[in-house]
Image 1 (cartoon, rainbow, N blue to C red):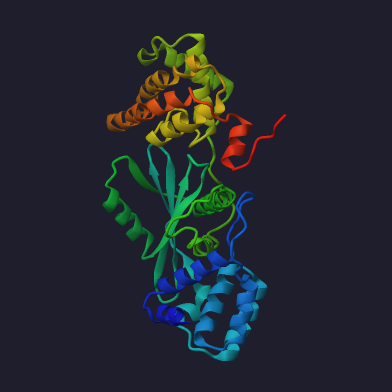
Image 2: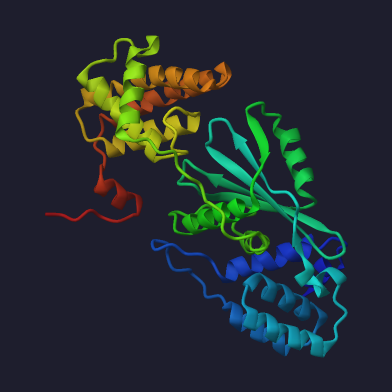
Length: 368
C-alpha cells in the first residue's frame, strides 16, 4: 500500500499504471504448453480483487479501478465502479475519468532495412492531458513475436525522436502505420510470444504487457497482421537462375550448390521476414549455428560448401535490394565469424529433425 500511495502521489500517472501492470503480469502469466509449473502459488486476479473490495482505502480503490480497466471485463468494471462510488474516495482526475482515455493520434512503425524486427509505437492520452507511449519490438527472426516492449511517459513523437537520437541509424526509418494494423500485429505477436519456449523476458517485458494490451484495445479492430511475401516455385526458380547467371554466382551451377541454394531459399522464405533477398548478421547466425546443422541431413562434404555459397548469395541479394555496402560487409563478417563453429558442428554428433526439437524442449527422443 505504501508503494501504491507513492505512485498515486506522483504528478504523472505512469508510475501507477506501471505498478498495476506489473502486478497483473505476475498474477496472470501467459504460459506455453512446455513452461514448467510455477514454484510458488500466487493469488488469482479475482482473489486479489475480492481482498481489495473488503479493504476500504484510497489505495485499494485506485488498484481496483486500474485492474478493472485493464481486465476488459465489463461485469468486473461495473462491480468495481459501484464499490468505488460508494466509498467516495477522492481519486486523481486521470483515474476517476479513466474511461475518457483516448488513443494517440499517431501510430508509428520503426523499421530497419534488413527487417530483423520492427518497433510498433502506440500511445494513449489520459484525462488531464498526460500521455504514455509504448514501443513493442516484434522480432521476425524468432517467429514474428513480441521479444521486448516498454512504456514511457510522453508522446509518440517524443519517443520516436528519442529512439533516433540514441541510434542515429541511417538504415532505419519511422513511418506512419494504420492503427487497426498496429492492433492486429501486436495482438498476433503477443499470442505467438506467449507460446514460445523459453519465453522472452526483459526488465520491462512482460511486466508492461497488461498496460500495452489496454492501450492496444483502444485502437480500431479489423486491421491486417504481417503478410509474408509470397514466393511460388516459378519465382524461386527465376531467382535461382538469375543468381547463377550473375558474376557473384559463377562457379556454383552444379547439383550440390543448387541443392544448398534451394535450402537457403527455403530458409529465406519460410523464416525471418520472409524475403530471401534480405540477409542480416542475425539471420546468418541462426542459419549456420542452428538451422542447417539441425534441419539438413546430408554428408559433411555437402554441408561444408554452404558458407561460400552463402557469401556469394548475400553479395547478390544485397546488390539486388540496394543494401548499403557497410551492411553487406557486416553480414559477410558474420559468415566468417560463425563458419568455424559451423564446420565443427556439422562434423559432430548432434540431434537432427524431430530429435532436435525434442532436445530443445528437454525431452528424450523415443527409442526403438
